[in-house]
Length: 88
Image (tube, rainbow, N blue to C red; front, side, top):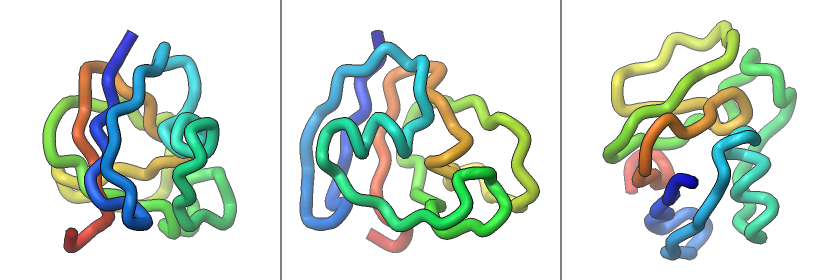
């Protein structure tokens, strides 16, 4: 089980407890936290979030990301993580 600390995504700041089997986007949706997305395939970049701490695994994506970014639709947590909207 992993912890996803959400900071200021659509005005929500809360702690989620997840198994890590689903994408971060799916986990956020399951907890009623809305994140912009379009393709769910890692091609468009609409769901890029800031990774404040922790590690994630990205399934194949075509977007270049910096070390402090993640694609919510393609990333799963590998440790407890803290995330926010970019520029938060």
